Structures are given as structure tokens and as C-alpha cells.
Amino acid sequence: MANKRIIVDPITRIEGHLRIEVEIDENNVIKNAFASSTLWRGLETIVKNRDPRDAGFLMQRICGVCTFSHYRAGIEAVEDALKITPPLNAKLTRSLMNQALFMHDHLVHFYHLHGLDWVDITSALKADVAKASKEAFKYTKYPIATGENDLLKVKDRVKEFADRGELGPFANAYWGHETFRLTPEQNLIALSHYLKALEVQRTAAQLMAMFGGKQPHPQSLTVGGVTCVMDLLDPSRMSEYLTKYKEVANFIEHAYYADILMAGKAYASEPSVTAKAGTMNFMSHKEMQLNRSEFLFDTGIILNGDLSKVHPINEDLITEEATHSWYKDDEPLHPYDGKTNPNYTGMSEAMTIGAEGKEVHSKVIDEKGKYSWIKSPRYDGKAMEVGPLASVLVSYASGNKRIVKIVDGFLEETGLPTQALFTTLGRTAARALQVKAIIENGLETFDALIENLKVDQETYTTYKIDKEKEYKGRFIGDVPRGMLSHWIRIKNGVVENYQAVVPSTWNAGPEDSTGLKGPYESNLIGLKVKDITQPLEIIRVIHSFDPCIACAVHVMDTKGNELGSYKVD
Ligand code: NFE
Ligand code: MG
Image (cartoon, rainbow, N blue to C red; front, top):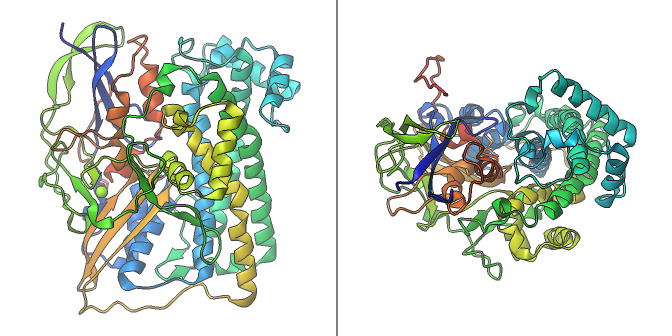
């Protein structure tokens, strides 16, 4: 019997259009998988021939989630090209803004974008409030929002919605799915934190806005430095930052990390989240400057899951190709020479499984031809997973003491083996471990900044762009979804070429010319879908990467014209 096909489209809860198509055999095991971005943006084309000083502002419009990431990347790529070193105060301020972004992003990811793949809201309504309140103490000494009264209120509030048949943001999920593993009491704890996290993420966004002027799309970075000088020199502003930082840190420690311990234990034997990762190569770049010379996370590559060796990154080996992507110029090109010329070749047709579980005739991607707006980045021809898991693994394998302590602590507290890190569960946990590392160490950056400001108040470096000269430069760093690089060539005083190689591109890219798949696709193969009308397992795996397809594809017509229309059935 021919394999059947399940389509999940859209699968993202934020940012962009991602379609997953999988083929399952008669036992509902996934035999092949395809990830397709169905929308082209294309800021790399818009930025050409513009003043390089605007690159950061234009590039930050790639995405409304990690806006700071592309803003900073656009600015630091130009700084690298012009050989400008911003003053320490600027570097540390950018590091603090990045920390706040990670805290905000990972909190929102776990609770609001991914949490409901792990937490069954309808089960929470059956919880014994007193038992749940006690349960919360198993994961932290200082639980948050889990007093009996808190939990009773949460239960009543959600029950009222449920009784009216209006589950709001909790509607249309696969409640009662047999792969949910938390008890009703544990589900209630997580539900209470889901609601509390809506408040705390606001504080985290304020932290970003304090030095950014606003959030999203901060405004205070400039080629050569930062412009938030008044904030940096105002003691009351700095102490407000500290207060908000501590509020967010407290929630991360006693709710988010506690819930990850709870979920780690509960899901330890659930096959859909403990299967070995598909791409066992991981790559990350150092990030989070703590003082004049130290960074919190390390640079490197881990190959085939071997933690005994961390390989250095050779930037010359990074390429993007478009064999299965809707662009001309299929061949692998280094990003300095990358091309972005669209070539949409349409869809194919086949029998698929409809929402009722019956076969229906549908449009499907043309898996033999081009099928995604995302390109396929490769390192030395290899597919690489990037993201918090890569960052945590590279730092752990490098013997980074701050990270070793946190990873070993997590493995000890959950009783999970090291191999559990190389799974969907490990990927989801790694985001919490990353922000735990930030809250335990990030204030070193703040202290270093305060100390330095006492003796040095420089916030920018002056520079000149020589129109007669040609420049090239790049930014490489890690952002919430993983390793990000921006590559710029400047000629005649304007941007000659620009390429952004983005975390979600590394992870969501289609097959390359050799048939090698990227992390999204390869992580789905081998997974068993228990109920083909409720493919929660697929959603859980893909959401664990926190997909951001706006970032991965980056054309937006500057006049707001529609470039295509898309129907979601
Ligand atoms: Ni649109 Fe982004 C991050 C970048 S995504 S969110 O993090 O760069 O791949
Ligand atoms: Mg790109």
C-alpha cells in the first residue's frame, strides 16, 4: 500500500508560514518528511544599493520577534566591514539587551507557543487544588502562583470558559491525547504559570525597551555604538532595570525552570519526545558578553553527538543552496556571494489525509522539485542544528564551568541520562537551561557596565565610509533560535550584496542536492503518530525548535503590495 500523507499547515503559532508534510506507513510511522515555507519576503534584496548605515534598521524588519537580533546583526556586520570597534559601554549595553530578549523569548516560547503541546488544559480542570499546591514544592522551594487560592482562581477562570464552550486561546487543541504525561495537578501548576507568564513577559519586554527606546523594534543602536546614553547615566533608571531583571529572573528560576524539571521527569519515557535527534551535528557562536573579555556561551561545532570534541567554526565553509528552494541559482554559495532571485515553481497534487482521517485529493509540495522559500544552509556540506540546545551542548562540551553546573544539575534533578539532551525533550529543556545561565550570570554584565561608566563614558566610535573603497564584513552570533549571521559587501558607499543566514533557515531548510535533510525534516522521520487525525507528536517536535519563518525567509514589498495570496484550508 502506498504511504499516506499528513499535512500540518500552518504549524507555527507565531511568525510566518510553515507547512509540514509527512508520509506515514501502515503503522503510522513517519517514513519521509518535508518542511516548506509558503511565503517569500526578501529583505536581502531591498537592502541592496542602500546606505549601509541603514542596514540595521532595514534588517530589523525581517522579524517582529527577534527584532533586536537583526538590528544588531545589521549594525555589527557594517562595523566589521568598516573595522570599527564600539566602546565597551556599547558592547555591554547590547549584551544586556540581548539577555532581556532571550529571557522574553524563551518564556513566551515555553508557555505560550510550545507549552500546550505538553500541558493538557482540560486535565487541569480535574485537579485537586490542595494536592497541586503541595506538588509544586517538589520542583522548587519557592513556588510561584501555586498557592491553593491561586490555583482555585485559575481553575475557576478556565472552567468558566470551558463551560461556555469558549476555550479562547486554549480551543482547537488535541486535549486528552494519549501522549500527554502530566497529572491533573501538574497540568494545573503549568496552567497557572501560563497565565502568570503573560504578565512576566511584559516586564521582560520593558527590560528590552529600557535601553532600546521601545520594543519591539528598538532604536538605540547605531553603527559605532549606542545612543541610550541618558539611561546609562541615570542611577534611578539603572536601579529600575535591576528591579525588573530580578522579577523576571525569579519567575524563570521558580516557575519556568521548575516546570521544566517537572516535565522532564514526567515525559522521560514518552517516545515522541525522547527519540534521538535527527541531525546530530550542532553549531553555535559565543554570546552574552559578561565583561571586557568573557562570554557566557561558547563557539563551536559538535559532530555526530560526540561531546568529547568541540570543533572550531571555519566561516569559509558556510554555504546556502537552493536545489529544493524557490530560487534560481541552485548551487551552494558562500553568503558573501549569495543570490536571492525568486523562482516559484508551484505545487503538485496527491491523495492526503484530511482532518476527519479520510483520504482527500489535495495540493501537495513537489518533493522532487522545488518546495520551500527557505534555502538550505550547510557547514562543510553538513546539516547543522542551531539553537539553545546547540549553544548549551557546545558550552557543556567545552567545559564551560557555568554551563556544566547547570546541565549537570538538570540531569541530576531529573534523573535523565546525558543522551536525553539529544532529543525533543532536551531541546525544550535547553531553552530553560540557557536562561537559567543568563539569570545566574547576566548581572555580571550589568555590574561591569556600572563600573566602567565610573571611569569611561564613551558610547560610540566615529568612523568614515570611503566611497572609493570596497568593504566586506559580517556579524556572527547566537540569537534566541540559534546561530545568526549577516554578511555584507559595500561598494561605492552603498550595500552591494547582503545575505542573512538565519537560525530557522538552518533548522527548517529543505533537502539539499545530495538528499541530505535539515533538522526539522530529519527529526520527524521514524516518529510514530498515534492518532493520524491528531498529529500532536509532529507539532511537539517542530515547536521545540520555536520556528520563526519570517526570519527564515525574510520579500516584503516596500509599498505593501500583496506578492501572493495563500489559502489555509
Ligand atoms: Ni524571527 Fe530569529 C531568532 C533570528 S529566527 S525570531 O531568534 O535571527 O530563526
Ligand atoms: Mg537569507
